[in-house]
Amino acid sequence: MALADLALNQPLPMQVTPADWPGGYWWHWLFFTVVIIAFVLIMVMGAIYLERRAMGRMQSRLGPNRTGPFGLLQPVADAVKVLLKENIVPATADKVVHWLAPVVSFAPVLMIFAVVPFQNGALLADLNIGILYVVAISSIATVGVFMAGWGSGNKYSLLGAMRNVAAVVSYEIPLVLAIVGVVIVSGSLSMNQIVAEQDIPYILVQPLGFLIFFIAACAEINRSPFDLMEADSELTAGFHTEYSGMKFAMFYLVEYAEAIAMSAIITTLFLSGWRGPWLPPWLWFIIKTFVVFFVMVWTRTTLPRVRIDQLMGLAWKFLFPLALINLFVTAIQVVVWPDISQWIFVIVNFAIAAVLILLWSKFFKLGQGRIEV
Amino acid sequence: MKFERYGIGIIKGMVVTIKHLLRHPTVTQFPEQRLNISRRSRGNELIWSREKCTGCATCAKTCPQGAIEIVTSTNMAENKYDVETYRVDTGYCIQCGLCVEACPYDAIFMGYSYERAKYRRAELVQTNDDLLESPERPASGYFHPEIAEKLPRQTLLVEKIVEKRKKK
Image 1 (cartoon, rainbow over the protein chains, first blue to last red):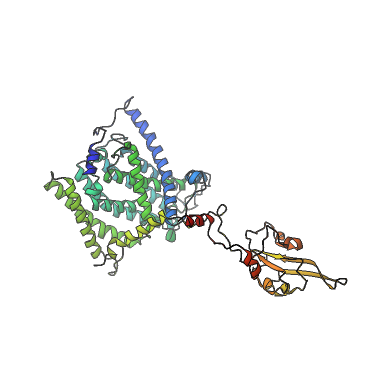
Image 2: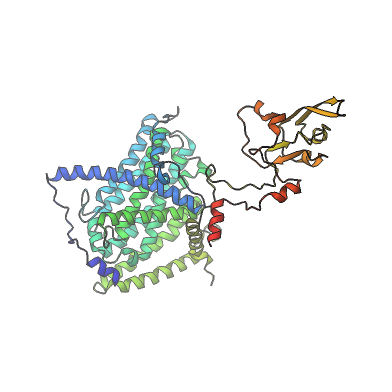
């Protein structure tokens, strides 16, 4: 009960309307637009640093440690380098599409942060369908990736982009079903409301949902072990093979901004967002986001890349049925026992998750009856 | 019931990576940290002693690369050869140490130094006084037990790591 007590003893009042800002709506809009852009850029730099250092240490290396104290300025140096590089557009490229692709994939990632609450009510737009908006917007980035693949006029780019589209279409379903579980428990689609409802972090109430969401999110933003679209051993660099200079930097930025966005959404949905004792809420939010991102780095370092049939098999044969069952179980719990303490469901759901994963691993088969994941 | 196929393998792998995150990385930061090189090794240079050398040119004959060139003149007064030129093209040298083993008068030694790369090919050719032993060009204990005895006992690890282990 300790965790629930801490959450209840919040000094903040649990109000879910956006804070009133002097000067009305436009100041609010301007302020949060600037905050979101700055936040995303700085978080991306932090993420790149964290990824390279943590991955280096996990591989028994040191990672970048020459530029600035502890190599902290390495992302800056990389940015400067990439800005000064030549911008090459291949002769066979579809020039307009090739040019537009990085922008099309970058804009939606920024737009995701419009509904992510940094602390209570501190968000650009407290949409009452916030999480639906996130699902809708985050898929648009795929259009940018496909534009890049098509516009480059290169077979590797096109193959990478096609793989990305296939992965996103498949993994969108378990992703959304996992979100629906959270939405049922919290009773709201608004991100801020979901956080306000989380007296127990939903990672405990929805352990299976969290696992499914995490795996699907990793696949959706194409992080290793699901980074088939830029598998360098097969497709040189996938969809951004033909990109250089600033346009490549945009894609690099998108990759990390998407990872940060997904970490922020996981934080909001499953780790009780900005809520936490002692520290200010926005700091809690950033810390939790980085913890989730660290787990992503961790899995990336550990797990080898899956094959394309394994990717599809995992989505359709493993995650999809489990997500459906999870949704069903959650719905029954919410409808039949609405008044029982959620801590009982924590134990029950962990047991159900363990049994389901064991059972499904036993039945999970790919190809000619080979059991491989 | 074996759990190998139920996601345990993934968790095991994750434990391995997190252990590596927490342990000391194995890399050496080269220009600042250097691994100790053995002082008994065949290093990247040849040391020649003018006093001991008789100009017999055994070393030149043994050298598989033909890297040693020796020019002598007859010294009738003292009834011996004078070495006029002793020239080694270290660019050809493969650090096999055969010349050191062949020398009947113990006049040449390997050095244990490294980082002896040059900017010009001509600088690789070393003549007479360039080859003498000096504090910058210490002789290795290779094939010379009397030198090896005097060299301190050493570890091949970075000093920092040695200090760390001593504390424990």
